[in-house]
Length: 229
Length: 271
Image 1 (cartoon, rainbow over the protein chains, first blue to last red):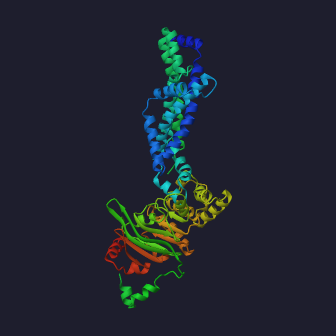
Image 2 (cartoon, rainbow over the protein chains, first blue to last red; image 1 turned 90 degrees about the vertical axis):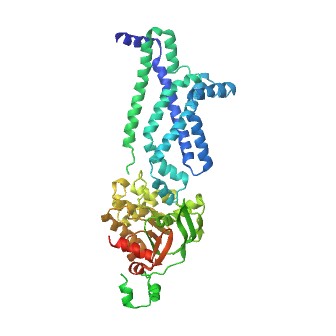
């Protein structure tokens, strides 16, 4: 036990562990916002009365939910950036960061869409009928009646998606984000193999500490905000 | 059952012409259904329905479950599509799904069996949503109007509550206020008291009778014979997707002409 604590102390002294976690938190934050927006649009498409929009939404979800995240992130980095030369910033690291955010968002939007759709299923069909009966067309009915209730029913699955997103942010190394946790872990393993157990535990505990509050908060929110019927 | 008519010995033709108990004059046709057909798979749920409801008329649709009466009611604002035939409201045929249909629906009030109040909005917001977002009314004007309507149906003191905090009868009266807030030309009631506890039925029926007396055009799917007798101009009896019989309420309940109607009435009267 003392060895382990000493190992943690050495790792913290030698490497900026908190900075690495901070990168993952930022990746997660921006990707979460982007994927929530994109996922909401996709969910709207899938529940819309227009067949072509439904089809496009379904196609998107099918493609991105079934593609490994590593491939999506490698694609953004190797094809969109390296081949097509589309830089998002003059700073190379910032470009990698934002490509990783986009890749993560594009991937998780598919899961956000499905989470919201499961929330839509918690809203009785009579709510939509009542909205239509007072003369609201699809978009106003969706935005003022269906989605506000659907989001409350989708908090738990959205929380699960957020947890997955946070942990998946470590795959950003595939998009060459060099200063996040999994890159740091590799560096540590390379240079301090003597502290192997401490290294693994450090990152495992770090993510547990980040994830537990998300789980607790979403569980609490989903009961607090539940629509009473 | 039919002793009153036979004892009176009056020619029945006279009774039919005098019969609409309400003394108000009916206006021009407001809702017109012509040869309306609808199938649910193999089930022919609406069969060649022809029906005209005039301005100011209160029509009660009655019939056994599965007779198509709810489908008929829901087809009038196109919550159910029809296979063929035409439905027109105030001379305008129901358009396809889209802006024009939304506009037309705004002029047709609908009250559902299960209330369907917006569960995440307060009573007041339920009533103001349509006027504000569809009619573009200001928040202040919409709330003023809504409070008047809530008072009128006797739930003015519940304006700040959420629907789940109200009893079924109160929720249904809010639903009536919500529909009235759009100032509809016609009100549709799809079994408005069927989901209510017995002691709450009258408070909803009273609100509906008051509405009828004010001259609102109403199409009411219900089994409440008291309401039909008090407020209806005409009763339409449906069975197996067809209109079997049409008559003024008193005549229909005391001397139904068809075997199907007699059979149905005997079942609901003996319980």
